Image 1 (spheres, rainbow over the protein chains, first blue to last red):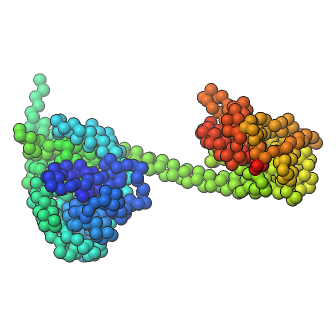
Image 2 (spheres, helix red, strand yellow):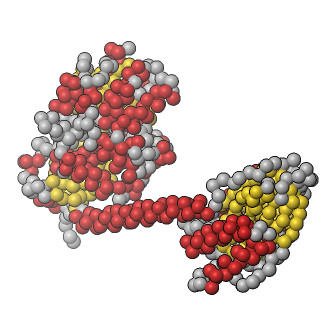
Image 3 (cartoon, one colour):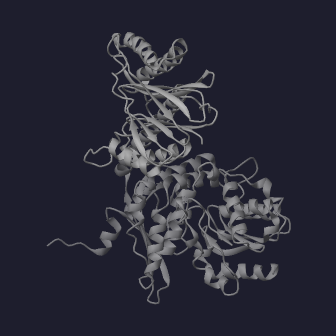
Length: 247
Length: 392
């Protein structure tokens, strides 16, 4: 099961799904409030904390009657996976956490990389981009003229990102502190991080590895926060290797 | 002829130009952008990534929104970001990027154009502030409205019986449909025991709406109960109500009402004797056990509370087993049914009644409630219905 993080939707997995789907059943979804999720399912209270999103992950497992899944969470979805796996460990065979951060804000000796003021700045940034949100994203011409359905997907999906919902998700994401939940993880866990990531720096990856018993950390030679886009082959290879290990 | 070179245009364009490697490392940057940022070329090229030029919040936005979109779509346009100049100043900009691909379609580098957006952003911030203010005002209005509706609902409830008592061997039901959640309506009804298996009932409509109408409604309801105890003859009850309401009518608030009032005699094998009178009220409907529907003349009397010393006429009927008497307010018959201001009418109601007869009070009220709900916004006025059946 692949879970996207804050800012995009399941299109994030586009480049690695073909490789994983060769011999695995892949479950993709958009978090409520993102992508093409049903706006009627939105509940500002439920989705004000990551636990609401974690509950949704468990609901998907139940609804699809999935056998224990390998949950691949990107960015904030990695902590959503940690919460879900701690709540109902039997539903999870393993966790793969891509560029995870258990806490984005510095706290004492812990370095998350951001201050509260930085996060407020981000929320402002979101606001200023919502003014022209649909106008900006709708006429985007895709680099895939031979696959026009991609353009339609993206345009529709991005247009539907409701500013109010995204703002709630941003707060739930960047104000979360899940450090205490790491120790409770009881399933095999892989951590994938990038060599240069402004959002989840290497120290944060190490912190996660130290606090999840038996976890393994792989650093990809990739820049940015989304190795599944910037280094899809290496990301898919690392995931496939992990899937073999936990099979 | 004016000469302009491509190089000079690139360097001194009225916008920032920037090329980065796929990992974001800045490979080329124009003089305009360096000037805005206050950096020397050597401090930037090969040393900084594009996201290093952004504020921290902008950097998160870039990594979570901009970079993925750019990667997926090959270009992103018109995104608002803030640059951080060397001296710490914030520069609001609009950023557009496109991926340059080689002949084989593989991405080679990212070209980015940066527009100064100080004026535009200031304007947008004004818009945002205005929007937030409007949203806050809307929220406040919404909360006020909810408080009002709660108040209205409570007041309305206090004017109507919570639950009708059920006389022996009878089925009774009532329904109230408010036309607006924001205003208390003037409709009222009640059914109450008088001892010896005799029962009083009434249903009426005070003209107008709102708190003043509600006060008169409460007055009418309690006066009717008290007047029935004083002298249960229906004509006398309405006469006494008229006296009380006329006192009110003489004050500033000229309210009057229409009402139908009746007494049900004790149950016999034949049914119950019904003595009924009306003041300016639409006629009651009788659904018979045989499946017919007809109006029984309860109307004709004068409006209650407008003139002193009025006389009312009493009619007596036998309500047989399985007969259902329906009383209602004119909100029902006056409901708008088309855009041309057409009204539901007494003819249509009679037809409807015939189509559901025979029906117990419960079934008839359920059907009428469905009819009322079907009017939707066509229901201009509140509507109340009450039905009484002698069970076979």
